[in-house]
Length: 300
Image (cartoon, rainbow, N blue to C red; front, side):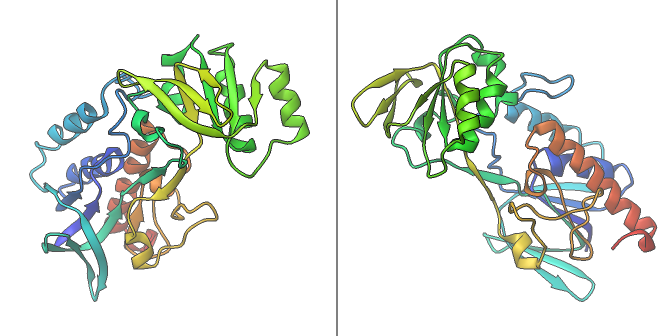
């Protein structure tokens, strides 16, 4: 039986495994190898690694676990998590099963895009983004279109205003901006478009404009869109973890969930979706698990 089974091998899971491996904990990482940021060309705001392709970051992370012989990595998709008398069993889609005394869930979230024809075709590498912190600098001084409801465009516009003076906001969704938000957008020079969107157009693999339902085309070089992050895996729900009102798993500062001996880290447990933040939460969770092993009375 493993000391810890980590489900998810991206920034949070690998970071936790590093902490635990350095204390000779017997750890198994099971990873479906479909990270959320796979479509992105580069990860940003990561200290010493700004601009590194996401896949390269993961490769470095796995390589740096090799000196720790008690850490194992297996590519597989976990489809079930069940409690045992003295631990947990995780089972993969291929039928393989493993048992561990503790579990760390680092399964992340997936982005649910608005149902706009063509939008998914340019997601990530093709000029459609959702995070100004991740990709804003790369599209500085370009023509940008924002797509989302009133809350989304009112949030994105001020963040991107320092990077471009050519921003249009296409409303998509039932929630309209308030009169105060419209005034703020007007003051920033953001063109507010209330005509429905027909499709996203592009060429050579990159977005070129937003086609409206009245036939007009709004040319652009980049689009920022509001997405709906959804839990990538049902495991936290299966095992009975509590969720907050926004759909994230409730955890304490060391990643402990409401279920004893089950921790969670990364995007699935926080609305702050940055690679470095996920790695930091994995560090905290790994430390929390090790602390609970050494001092059982401290946590779960």
